[in-house]
Image 1 (cartoon, rainbow, N blue to C red):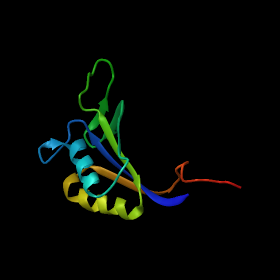
Image 2 (spheres, rainbow, N blue to C red):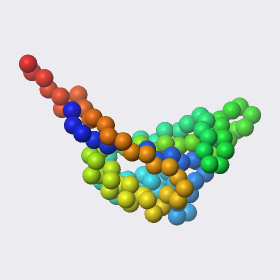
Image 3 (cartoon, one colour):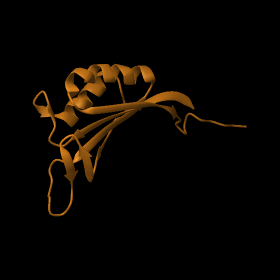
Length: 110
């Protein structure tokens, strides 16, 4: 196992950054920061600064929550956060330390 950092960026489907969907902009900035293995998850419901976003049957929302998540070396995550900071406005970013393990890297021949 090795030390790593996890970063989550919380968005909604309608968020824009520089005229493009925020999810796309965040993915491009993360790639430019050297991150790999970025995942976007679509939520079924969320509550934030602008109220409740829900996929409930009657609401037919097109503004569902999105979470962009990346796990990498702490230095790369920090570079990504620094690159994202000027573009995110009120959006929430969370980071925390994690332990990284890939089964293919953990060869225990004992």
